Amino acid sequence: MKKDSLLYQILLLSLLCASVYLGFRFLLPLVFPFLLAYILMRMLFPIMNYLHRTCNWPRPVAHYGVLFAFFSVVSFAVIFLIGRIIAQLRLFITNFPVYYQLIAGTLMKQTTHICQCIDYYLRLESGTSLLFLNDQMQQLEEKGVSLLSGHAGKTILQGLLSSFHILAIILIVAISMIILVKEMKPINEAYRKSRYYQPVHSVLLQLKKSGLTYLRTELLILFANAAVCSFGLFLIHNPYFFIIGMGIAVFDAFPVLGSGFILLPWCLFALIRHHYYYAAILITTYLATLFIREYAEAKLLGKGMGISPFFTIAAIFTGLELFGVAGIFLGPFAIVLLRALWAECKKTNVLSS
Image 1 (cartoon, rainbow, N blue to C red):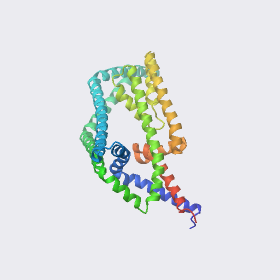
Image 2 (cartoon, rainbow, N blue to C red):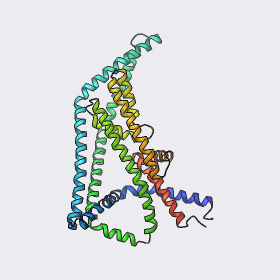
Image 3 (cartoon, rainbow, N blue to C red):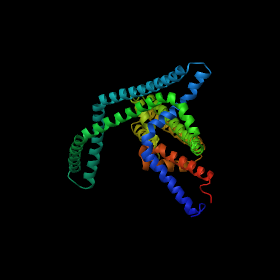
Image 4 (cartoon, one colour):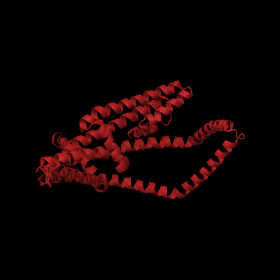
């Protein structure tokens, strides 16, 4: 088979796609903690060298001091976020009976009205539809309670296992970073002397440039939208402004859905209840999040990655289908990696005859 034939190129592209998929599916979960530790150390290492060489700090003080400062900042941020989330969740659980009665009363009122209309137009005895609906809801509630009680232990166990798994990953990353303080230089020297340094380095450079652009853009959008949504909800005196704002920002990261899936119905409900100030704040918040996402993705993401917005959305959707929520990041990374590998194949004359 000729190397410049269309069939050969299709087969090579299929092989690259299969390799990337299998790598992301099976290899990445195994090496992710160590890869994350290495990336973080590569980001911190220039600061360590600057303090050691320019500021004449002793090497152990510069290296471990920067590492200690990094761990302290990250720990403080995580503790602050978790504290705010727990405080607002506790407030919500305390007020849940009030919310439940309010929502149940509103739904009961509207449901009774609809059932009365059904009885009238179908010429049924008054109360027939409501009685039927109550029977169905009672059966559904019994099945729901039975289902929850049957899976409660399994759900709690899975939650505990997931928590321990996350804590184990965090611990591995922290220990790996401490070990890499002394191992960064030998690892980099061994990597540079490797016979695979040139092709691997070329691929990693392109992946670093495009991948970091995507990650930086998505994180910028996430934090900006979280701040905007939290501030908007704070203006309408919502007691859960922080946790709901973060939830809307995370929800906005999913294609198609966006923050409007939550903010627009909320705005409409406020208009129906004649809360025009609330509605104005909510619609302004939605427009602000829409502007942030459209502007950032069009100006920063497309240019930085060299991929059109259409293919970016296609990559995110494909990633979601293949890898779940992580596919929001892995989909575009896969496209960038495939493009880098394809370019390296051309450079090394793999595609030439």
